Amino acid sequence: VCFPGGYGTLDELFETLTLIQTQRTTPSPVVLVGKAFWQPMVAWLKQALVEEHQTISPQDVESFMLTDDVDEAVAHILAKCPECGPVWEHPRRQVAPSPGEIVAGSDRW
Image (cartoon, rainbow, N blue to C red; front, side, top):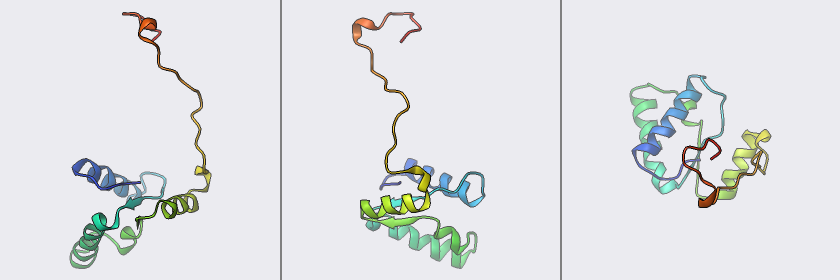
């Protein structure tokens, strides 16, 4: 799930899309939240990379969804990844130590 951001966000997004495109990772749902932010970029991808230069396929631009609706995003993720399930639990609860429990040089904390 990507929200509007800067270079770091775009780097992570395109790295993920590249790994999916080149089949270097298991395909997973990619959701771009914030249509007003993402639609101009998607239009450019379609016009420049798909149509004009033909450096990516039309299917590559269909590998993610745009939405402004959180419920729609969740439904898309669960439809594409049923094993994700509606609830994720941490396998082991961890509690941060109090300042008095932290000992310099200790490997406990």
